[in-house]
Length: 468
Image 1 (cartoon, rainbow, N blue to C red):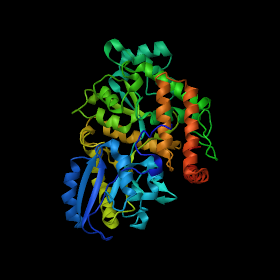
Image 2 (cartoon, rainbow, N blue to C red):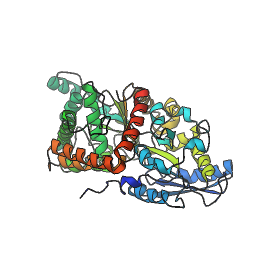
Image 3 (cartoon, rainbow, N blue to C red):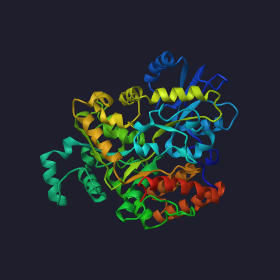
Image 4 (cartoon, helix red, strand yellow):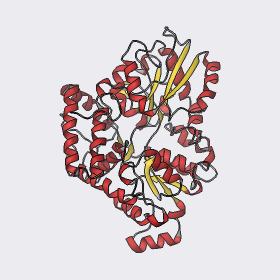
């Protein structure tokens, strides 16, 4: 029997979560707009936004949150029914292909200029298309960066000991070898210090794909392509096997009792508590680690581009409008108001405990003191902004696939790579199982249709200089 979806309902029902709904039956921007956000994105500032939004637009907005785990199932179900649960909703950007059939193209309701779309960083602009129509706009700019402890990396004794052992200077890693060496060097269980942290449960997909993509780039191939032109799996090969091997190797430099099943939230807390030297992780790690209210190492946090040639943009959130919304104009108005630079920046500027939103607009990176007011005095804000801009302007970027069935494809990777990490199967056995399930998912959706969707997505990436 085929495994169940990690993220909820089978991908044939694909769509993520809702953001704006209305009780009004009209299509004009009037009445009430209901906005649904997963609990990780729901913040106290939204309660401040609501009266401001009404004063500015005349519309009443109701923000509603729901657990992260319910994003996919509950919102997809409501999108397939007659009445929308929300007029607009947030979803992970790599599910635009799953939710696309149930979303309203934004340009059918309003203009991109109204959304201030040109200010969205180029890679984030490309993530939310379905059949060449924009069905979402980014509200959370996730990308991998290297968050490291400057008190360790700049320590003269540590630097001397590292060079004596490895023969080169201690600095933020630029290659896997350096990343691995640094992790080994700082792993000191007796002192409750470890050299790295990677998620080995739930979000396994993101970390496996990082290894897979970087190895492809190292070898000079079209990095990250998990299918060929006929949608045949391109993953059970030496690159995939080496990706899992590296992933398993990194678990030796994490707390032993958690290494084989490291949750994403626990990994962050370990870093905030001062137990991790470096983390190749989403930007929320740096945001939280630099917040003195929750982090013991806030004064010693710096960022650098992640090891490897390619900037990784896994996950991230977008806002879209339900096709079955009865107040699409109101939903668009709410999204446009949230996308105004000042409002968007205020959302990101919230503390880690209040908001997980990461910057996605160029203006946010160009105004670091406004985007990261708590960290501006230490110099972290400028450091973060410079690192983020460099990563987003990298000529080599990997954006996740976003086609129908992405939920199922990702779920296969998560399940079987996790089994390999735990030693239940060999890396190649895991990859062969993934390939078999990839084929099954492709046939479920229709191979010819999937070939067309993948070709469109790949062409969009290649046209913009990515994936090659």
